[in-house]
Image: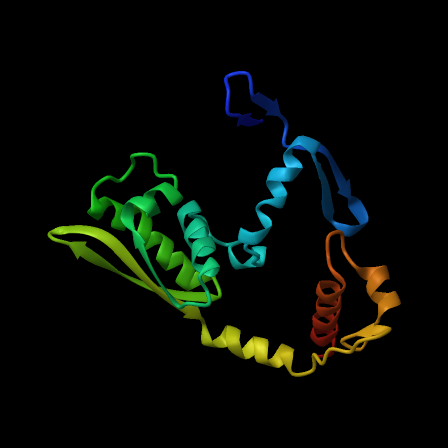
Amino acid sequence: MFRFLGTGPAHELVTRWVQAVMYIENEGAVAIRFAAEILPYLTQLSEQFTRYALADVAKMTSAYAIRLYEMLIQWRGTGERVVEIDWLRDSLMLEGKYGDIQNLKRRVLEPAVEQINELSPLWVKWEQRKTGRRVTHLVFTFGEKKDQKEKKKKLAAPQKKITGPSLYGIPRSIIEAKARVGESYEEAALRLLQEAQKKSG
């Protein structure tokens, strides 16, 4: 349920997030129709929306690792991010857990960073900063692993964008026929190109 509270006591809206869900069996996909009342709030998310492949986090068992990974890729262009510990606690929804910094490091940060380094396309390091005697900030340094950069270079080499009736050398009719629900022309063309490269190599 989604609850919106307006400016006055009479402005309260309680609605469901989803109006309908349909499983598309031959595509292995799920189509979701959101409730009309929720759409304005979803469109406001577009500027802060972060995309990543589910495969990047599929093997992670720590919810904190997944959330930290999501935060890091939001800042992927910087390679470094300084965050206040209180802000991080709120972002990870710790709700009063692990109040002691040693507990936070041992139970949350160290396992999360270990899983990101082992199971995702990113490497990450962190260190703490103090204000006076108290640890108040964490500094995350991160980047793409070398093998991920090499894979992207290999994929990028043949991907010359062609305008007109084809995209990346794939006719638009084929892209339209094989596109998955929610994919743009470019996303579908890239996926088809990668699938063809896997079959040939």
